[in-house]
Length: 253
Ligand code: PEP
Image (cartoon, rainbow, N blue to C red; front, side, top):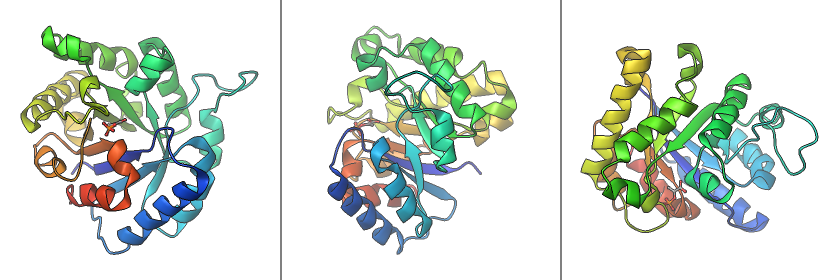
């Protein structure tokens, strides 16, 4: 049975005290929940990872980084390498988020290098893909997502691919308050699963977790997560409120 996952992407939000309060509140609420075969991941900004890891020791959530460098090591001022994060025992990382593509000019080629770094250092990698509104309106959304996956992920061997989680995040839904409908999410997730089956076989595709991201909240999560090919969510804004985030977690159980 494939893993159900809810991952919180805090982006560049909160000061240290706010971050500590939020993560402590989430840890407290998780004490009353049996996650079963499900995983909760919290991805705070880099400076808060160590604090999050300390709290995670006594809790059931995992910790992820929002980004990693495509370089291995060396004179790259401001970068944070996969090797550094792995040495801190960070388990997950997000790669290919649309905000990184848009504001930091990350191309499919750079993203592929980041994935190589993540795989080399044994991260579970949440790979984000998704189309712009104009691309959906032009009927190109399947082609766009296929190309993103083919370029960044499909160079991986089957063994390497086992550490990949796909997050389908239509760019028009991120931070806009306009989520994909459950039908739109299911249609794209089924397409992605078929794509994975054509590259790695049906057994691998059936074991791959495919998350939905884009204005997901406690109200729309139950219906979106009920779709057969939706295995949870990557949550931005709604992960900044402990009660709201926990309600979303409950929707995968
Ligand atoms: C995200 O940034 O990955 C995301 C899904 O954001 P939001 O939930 O705020 O749309």
